[in-house]
Length: 158
Image (cartoon, rainbow, N blue to C red):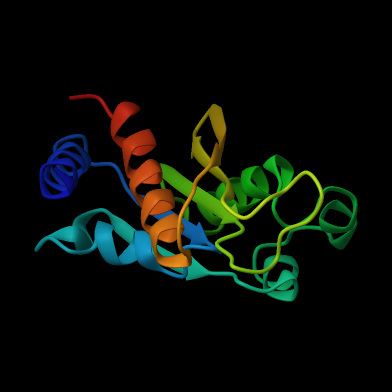
């Protein structure tokens, strides 16, 4: 199923001449690996950035420290800024931002392990979803990357 999804995304991005960039945190580059797994991905894939620390989110992605302090690095606000800012910096047509808690540590009150925010940014639209995944660190990361691909595919014209 994953191979079929990747092929659909690959074909749609090429057909419509769209480009994409991704800013990842909890998935640690897994989304970029998947999006570049098919030959010819260089036609659409511009950049994959793993902004794991808060400092990298601030310095490289331009997310204000006050936003992170107020809402937390794992928040809708940060996911939206990750997606918007990586798209702006690369001039990509589409971008994805992912931030979350893969565990087994890092949970806080109201944000258990498995809390993940995924944001898709397009020219005049931003779509952000909150997920609550279960399982091991590896499983949560896999589920988050898969959910990002599903979100992307659902918003690409056939």
